[in-house]
Length: 325
Ligand SMILES: Cc1ncc(C[n+]2csc(CCOP(=O)(O)OP(=O)(O)O)c2C)c(N)n1
Ligand SMILES: [Mg+2]
Image 1: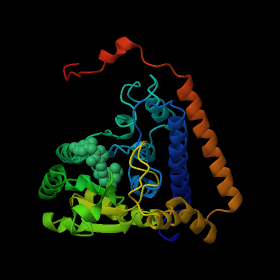
Image 2 (image 1 turned 180 degrees about the vertical axis):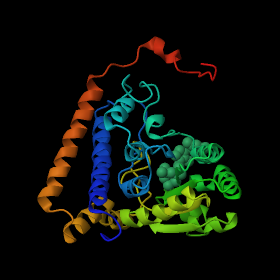
Image 3 (image 1 turned 45 degrees about the horizontal axis):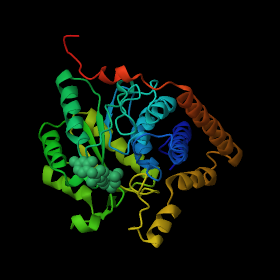
Image 4 (image 1 turned 120 degrees about the vertical axis):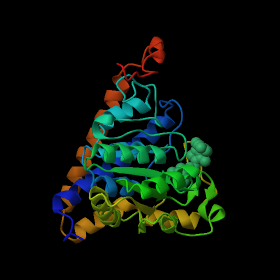
């Protein structure tokens, strides 16, 4: 594994994954204290997907996200403190506290937005890909969506269009086996969502989404192909969310053995073990990195807690944007 991925990249990957996990654990804690307005959908357990993918992207590349988007934002380079402020509904958040957990966007790092509408990010990513092609740059767009979203019409329409126009889009299905409480096997006869790529004449690959290096390798190939103008790829990452669908879901529909099996396959634990085993990092270095990140998350919480709420009259600001300026 260390042969193809540079040491600094491996360390950066570990940092980001640990950062997202720590961030999500903190959001869960704040939610329990009744400090988070609205709902939350946590990314804990799925970090290898966003990080494995985004490590291959440049700042000027784009991503689109889902309702489970905190990890996507942070992996693409958004500042945790401003993501936290948005989740707490504060004016210093990315949408000035008016979007909340499910509507975070940061155009400055190419994060085009999270959305509460399942499958809605897929055509937006296709449109961003079309814009790249028309402008003639070598940027790419990566599009995250769930197994549930892959049964929406938007999935089929957007992938087909991206395929015929050879758009630079990487379609990344985060198959965590469930769409709310519905198991994938109840709504799909085929096991691999990646197999659907055949229907559109593009490459489709299914990878272990809890192995960050497997995601990294698949993304690397897909990004190269997209930058060369050879068109889109569908990558299916098999993964698992550690918690229920959203904050109120105790996830009783999941068998205990299944949950335990996936907890054993925790992507962060696995990477940590590999890094130690291959002498990429010593235990003390890992502990130092983790401490640094935990401190940074505490600072993010402090920043968010101290920030003001938007004033009531700000509710009607930023509602429309005019191209005429
Ligand atoms: C168009 C639409 N239909 C239904 C919903 C309700 N809903 C919210 S999340 C969700 C499940 C999505 O599952 P999946 O795409 O697998 O993503 P995951 O939550 O597993 O990450 C549903 C049905 C919605 N928000 N939008
Ligand atoms: Mg799902």
